[in-house]
Image (cartoon, rainbow, N blue to C red; front, side, top):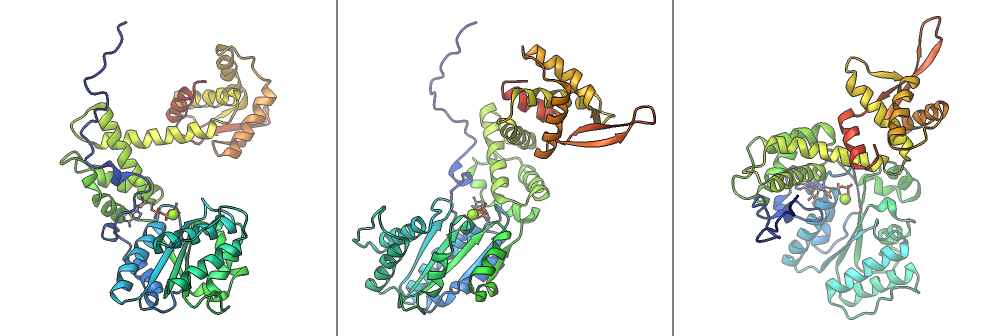
Length: 402
Ligand SMILES: Nc1ncnc2c1ncn2[C@@H]1O[C@H](COP(=O)(O)OP(=O)(O)OP(=O)(O)O)[C@@H](O)[C@H]1O
Ligand SMILES: [Mg+2]
């Protein structure tokens, strides 16, 4: 077989994307690209409104499932508040702290101080270690005073990851406790609904009044979000039914804009790889399927080869017997034995396989039910695969052991 030849330009891209950045994670679009969140934009705007005229921002809590625009909308509105404050001759500052990156009080407080110093262009030494969280907060209060900041808002994103509530407490009481003349407030964001109860127990009950909930997006909103980013693609690359398809699928499954954008991007990447003229609905289906395969692969990646043989056996039985849903342990065991031997592995005992199957049902991959087998047989356990067998087989193939 001959070696494949190098192309003239090994870095050549397929001409599918004009600006793929628009579809990448971490990209924060301008407020005018934010669609379908007018109510939420207004609610956060209302909370920050007083700060744009030099008054106290209202500390607010934002809840909602993943990918519903919480981080994006909060950042965009805070950025917009800057401009508004400037026209009012008010000194407004904000810091954005992602608590999943800064999980301790000290790290989060340091990041807040660091951002404020950078935004103010202040020449201040912020030690990396060796001082307490409260010292970082004192640096912050000093900066606010030195630069005569009227209002300061801290966005604490993924606040449930933070190990303590002290930072939030000190922000909501900075002025009344005499630490700062500046009006200080916080926007707290979480996708863990349990966090609400935890917070209510510990923090000032006045916070409860300022809750904003972000609902999952519906198909129409997802469509608008995706349509707003079509300039990520070259002209007429996207067939007209592609975006409606991605929007409909995503709305049905999760209402998560991040996943919807990602699906569109992956569909484009497939088209790019295949060198096709346009991105089609078939690319979308393939992208969705590939994402499922990847997810399943990840799920089983930590398990032993024997679990993979067992799942492979159940997947093959399911695919070969479309009229049947569930299979008895013994039947799965017979096929498992063959597959394990083919791979040069000593099969486990049937009892062990039975137990592993029960364990898989905990992972949500299979479901095990007792079924009456008639008088002569007594009751026995049947196992059902809860995933598309084709995806399971493909993922197991991809993981190298099947
Ligand atoms: N209304 C919208 N208009 C345009 N893009 C949006 C909108 N909502 C979300 N997005 C995009 O979807 C992605 C996810 O949004 P975002 O990060 O704000 O979600 P989140 O609610 O903070 O999710 P998580 O809880 O997982 O942090 C981002 O890339 C964002 O740019
Ligand atoms: Mg977020």
